[in-house]
Length: 475
Image (tube, rainbow, N blue to C red; front, side, top):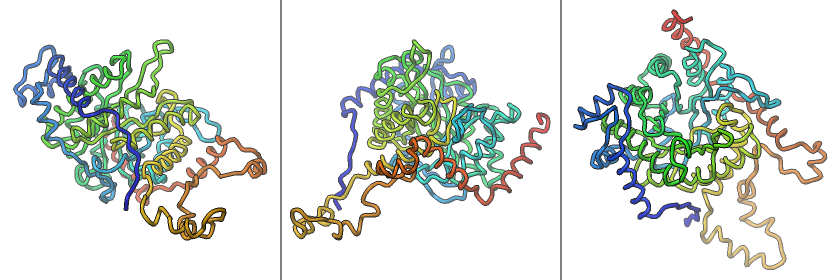
């Protein structure tokens, strides 16, 4: 069959080569600062390099070798060991979550601190929606002892879904403890058919902070694939020009790649960036349309390198699930689907990523559903072109009872899972509900229906006992 499918291309080969040369120049002449003594010593010893004031410079040949050694695809499993994703080969996949501090409820959209029950409910909701292939850490639990927020949050994370997890641990000292707890609950090493992908950030500009690279080493040595992604504030932590931001962030990503491949050759890694702008008038971060272009450019660089790409999810804008957020989600989802992205794991947050809302999970899922329909294109062949059918019906008649209609009327056009297709009269009969009210009510229904995996009670009991035994001095 002849499939017609849209594609988005940003840079030509000459421009990609120029971008690559610029990145190599930054790494070889400016270098990066490595704040972990152990990682810096490892780089010097294994690569035969010398640092000065913690700044180490990577010659082009070392960078090129790291690119060659990184796997082109990454196999990801669910918690029960079933293969789910082959990142780097498949289309863009999506996930929900962000390390939010506040929860925006779906009833009246008021804010409260993020609690353990919110973690549970959001993981179950995300897990119930088919287009979310991974569930990321959805918030920082704030109704338990601060030192144990990562432990209780991660316990709810693994207990309420069997889908693959993208794991963010804010307290670097707790990262090994979280992995130990996961192994205790699952009865196997986390690197055995890995369903956990830890997420790490350097500090722009050009700082490989100790917490990040030390946690990278722990994850890689346990056999886990990792995400290494950076976050810009264009005009503050990166140059204001899109090309300047791309160059600096790409240099950080390839420095992270070198570190990962020096820790273990062939370590699976996804690279990506969150190219946010910084408004000097309001002192706030935000996504600009050029943020999406920079992310698309990054996806094209990763295709050039043959490395799986982790993209921005278009999250963080808006005051909840509103028109502002919808604009950015649509632009980001469509652009990255039509380019070369592989994973967009952070859908759901707003208000500068400080809060997270279940209504955003649901509406963004609608956006993904429609964007996938556009991305998938259509079949252009003899049967689907329906030339014989058009001849049979002829001018001025109807196709209501024709084979193409009878075969495809249930799937031939988009039907929303949230918003009824009302006529004006039907909408008025229903009380003229605002779309936002319909979204809130649908979200509440979906949350009520979302179920926990059958192991939930067992995992919670075992996990809480693990925390009590390991952290009895804090409790």
